[in-house]
Length: 67
Image (cartoon, rainbow, N blue to C red; front, side, top):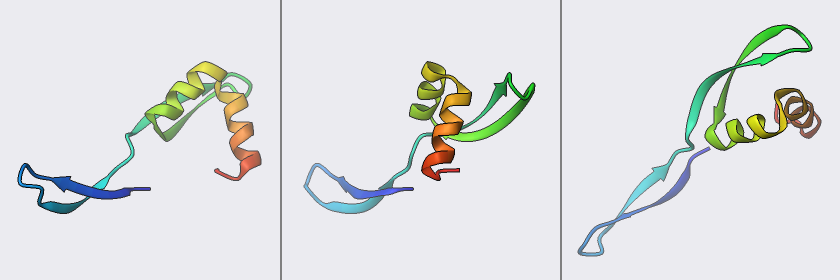
């Protein structure tokens, strides 16, 4: 989801712009199912998956209703 904001020039003229999330398409291996999945995730989500592991993150997201 994009966030709104302004570009501010040197003369303090403000023009509308959008801030887009930093999304990447990444493949993850699920060892329990012995298969690869492709997800479009933000870079912060990639860091979370790297830290906690793909299986706990997927179960947490399923409980919260994100996927």
